[in-house]
Amino acid sequence: MGKRRRVAERRKTRPAVLGGMIAVVVGGAGFGVYALYGGAAADERTGATADHKPVPSGPPTAAEVRAASARFLTAWQQGRVGAAAAATDDPSAARKLLTGYTADARLKDVRLTPGPAKGAEVPFKVQATVAYRKLGKPLSYTSSLTVVRRARDGRPLVDWHSAVVHPDLRDGDTLVTGASGTPPVRALDRDGGEITAAAYPSLGTVLDGLREKYGKKAGGTAGVELRVVRGKAAKAAKLSDKTLVELSKGTPGTVRTTLSPALQAAAEQQVAKRARASVVALRPSTGEILAVANSGHGFNTAFQGSLAPGSTMKIITSSLLIDKGLAGADKKHPCPKTVTYGGWKFHNDDDFEIKGGTFKASFARSCNTAFISQAKKLENDDLTKQAQQVFGLSMNNWAIGVPTFDGSVPVQSAAQMAASLIGQGGVRMNPLNMASVAATVKSGSFHQPYLVSPSVDHRTPATASRKLSAKTVSQLRELMRYTAAYGTAAEAMSGLGPDYGAKTGSAEVDGQKKPNGWFTAYRGDLAAAGVVQAGGHGGDTAGPIVAKLLKLGG
Image (cartoon, rainbow, N blue to C red; front, side, top):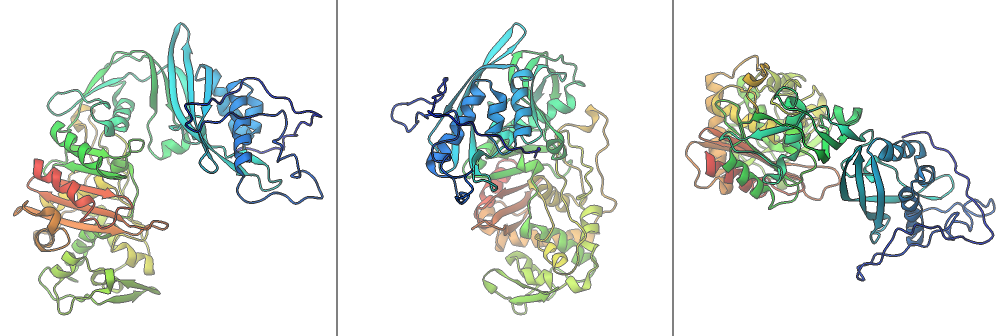
């Protein structure tokens, strides 16, 4: 956040209503007309700065929310950047971005229409014109602001974040209108059909990434546009610049992808049935990505998410235990109700136990204690090495054609190391990573996933330094096949055998009533993985999404 300074409140003997009213009444829908005053709102002037009265605390009142939001929006609309910035809790950062809104983004004739407040949050509609030399186009979008109370004096102010100005902005991003510098691309699916965000809403961020990577290489010429230019934080998160308005078209170059139009359409349909769902499908024999979809289109969770994978991680852990002779598919293996390690007591779901059962039975039913019980026999870095050396994960070196998060399996100790064995602790994955894990089991070796063929730009795909032994691969396939037929994945995978395998997962997240539900599986030469955040058990939530794709393309 930028430096903050106290802004003196003007005092007048009589309140003067400012011009340029910004709120309207729309068909009784709850939009209100805000009466704006030259100084603080009436209820602010009665004590926040008086020494003999206590500083207001607690959430802002409805009247304070109306006054604070109106003060900010009116000043912004009128082009009084200093006054608008002073109405926020970070005047320096607000002034910089609001100045750029006119100077760099070339936005004029700004009209801001607030909607009814929801507590301290006020949604508002933005209408403006993007004007660059002789070019101009309208811009319309919705955003929101939140009013908070400043601790030192209780004054209600707008909680400043760049997303207040535009919802696609992250702190540190800017808006710029001009020659883009990066030509557009015409993306094609594997059959030669054009890919558009209108046809496939999930692919908006993918198309942004393709343009950033291949725009200059594909032979196009740049146009003039309003775009989000990412700052350091967003670039660190591997977010691409985003086009908001195209004033003049550039000449696009052409980039062919590996996406299957039939599978992509099915993936879009499936994730749309659930909130916060993501899925990826790929070909185990080659690594070609055939589909990627997210029910939320602002962030590509499927490629760039960083989530605890829960029990789907047990595929990697099982490969480690089998390699070390600590488990075997048909060998007896303990599955008690609880196990204590590193000072933590680990439980199974509903504290179940399997007496005299095999490792295969524990894997199929997702017995946590069967894996935690082996922690004392492992080194702290064993799981990290297995993920990197066999499954190609956690090395930040995938080059699929667009930005990705390549999984993280950090070296941990004590209870955190034990938790990582069951996909909790510090382990983080996304559907792309877990689809690759299932694909590695199916193919017998790691093939880095890719969306654009490496031959297009002569990049070198990531590799794994070693393969699993034939014995371990055979047992992993048996574990996943048994789970698909008789275990927690059986309902979702019904009718898809016999050349199949699956693993479910549920990952607890602080503050969520329901866990994230995971599912990863393969059928024939198709592997897929999905997650439904805050959805519950993976077999019931992500399972049907993954199974539908496997049925269509496996």
